[in-house]
Image (cartoon, rainbow, N blue to C red; front, side, top):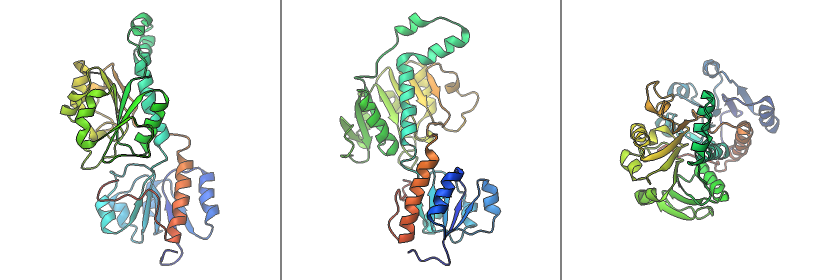
Length: 324
């Protein structure tokens, strides 16, 4: 059992259904819980938790919780948290890895299918009542047999790689080090070898967290190294991409299309060219949303809570210095 002053206290400030809260409360009836979906009311409460389950957390929030020992964040990314302060106080941080891989991967695949089948042009034509079927038919293609390069092989990227391989795509992976357990890959390159892999891919999917190493990783130079006529997707973090360079490549025909679940900033300015380019799909950072998110987070939190109370290493531990 972890050595705490008094009975363990848990504060939940992320939206969970009543049955999910009941699962946690029923599993640990002797622990003192507070659930405050309204984040502001949680800050004003004099309840000082040892454990926090949340969507977001500011430095000001953290100062109000002097007894905090562990933060379970709902998202996979942690770049929006006061990581320096978390590290300085020695607070354990775990993320929501595993809760979002399926919907994010399916969002990326939906974008690929949309481009392959000509759906963006057909939907716009339907709004105009314009019959363009013959024109679209000449531009359609099949994903089967095409090459997908997945950059970042965490939960999101690995799930996308497995699903794309199941569709008959040739899947290449890129990460800091090899992933021998990921059998879906038919080729692997390290980040240092990324420039050599980009020209091989018909589709490039960025599935990275935001860290010092990944910020701006898809620079203008790398965008221009991609295969002419390729498609680009970002389901990780907006700051990993040079959006003006991407817009230029989409405008001049270097790239055939882009599907962006994330941008920088969010939303992008009203006059940004990405809004109006016909070969761009903007899904407004909803790619990770799923009716099963809360259930998965509840299961993860319950497992980690048992581990925390037993003094066992937590699942999905994040190194605040690295950001993952």
